Length: 293
Length: 304
Image 1: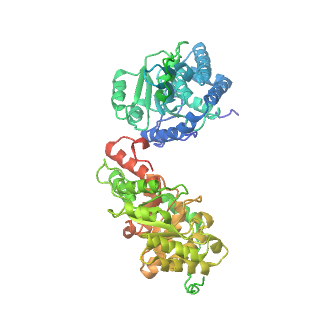
Image 2 (image 1 turned 120 degrees about the vertical axis):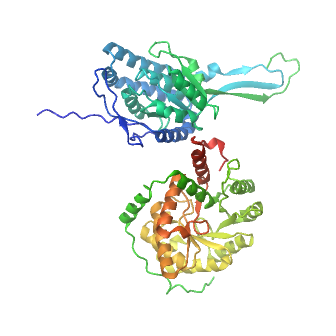
Image 3 (image 1 turned 180 degrees about the horizontal axis):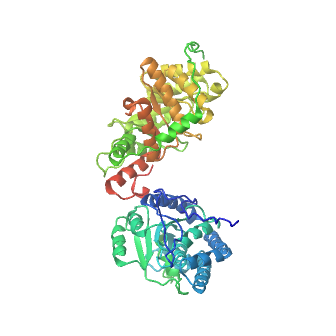
């Protein structure tokens, strides 16, 4: 007797849990042959709301962890992803990638996670500065994470775009609410399972599937979201999101980047999501001392 | 200290509680669909029913003054927001709160009787109560002796409440059962009946120091005791769930429950209160959300 295959239920990821969407809706993206890929949650604005609450709760403890410990946890994500490489390659191929392209994308994703893991305890030293001032102050600037970062993941890739957005954000101590690719959502859900098993505290990464058209506006107007990053978004939606981001002076980036290229990882993706805090520390003015600060 | 005993023939026989039935009923309160207009009214009502509370060892004069200001000015740049019902403080802070609130209708409630454990002599409890009243407290939140209750000394608990009620004079008496320590719903019902028959103006779930605090199961059980008493005597008793109600949604569920068990007569801050320290901001954020359509952030509301 032939065995009946057990199909996976693809659910969303909020606060370290895998709930179904609050709305109860789902959609069925198709593969390149027009065959149904899976039933995927069509999340609603209320899921966005819940995810932001979870992300806000997680932000404080995550940003206060030592930078070194954050690096360890990010590296752990790479380890867990490595262990499930085959599953990701398989999902990418089901979503229309060739075997070579799929393998490349998964490997690049793992390498990119390791890249950002390494930056965790270094970016602040590299970007911070001691500033020359003309008064009796020791004046220095250092970085602090912005808070909750909204992400509309790159829509034309399933995994690498997602990784390229999330990692620099959490590397710098932010927490994230991510809207996955609408047409290629499989890897996003499986990636949340990887996160779930890699010591990332609940709520630091929240991943929703569904229509960015529908949910991005909620994310952009949300007063408790501090930054919004997107990439290669069509200009009409991008402009709309920029307008909605104004109310709480949300920082917004729309990167025009092909994430599949190897060198599309850099320090500035981390520092884009950081606030600069400058401190004026009064010091004794020593007569004749030559230092400018 | 001797107290006159008038309890023995007044403690009623309490019905037993069907826990599964209670849970099922509560699940139904939580699934009511509340539309925007009703939600707005409900949220405003919740605000007007809040006893803004600070009961910590680290309370200072400044903290109490700040809270009193918040009680009167919840969110001034949004029109039509009511004031809260009362502030709830320790006896040592009553005079400060009373002074800070002198030009408003916000009442001052004081905990008393050796709050939160109640492990002190009756004479001290009465003195504690009288002191708070003298300082100007409009309402007294007393705790029952849970230890005595759990060892079955119901008459003692009854007489103690009656004695404190007498000491309150004109101040309204809220009796805290501390349901988290009573363990079963049957005990909660029994304690509610004792408090009500001993003269409580309000019964209150918890001190906020013990978990679980104001669960809906417990509040439901206490509301049923109030209803039975009202059916029998025609006398209204107030209800105050306290501790653990920190979201607007949960507060609305509680209002639905009160409306459906006790009716609209209880839907005012004369008969129903929320004891909470962080509920107000969540309710305000929901109100602003309904008005503007935009989800709000705690960053733009006053500190609790």
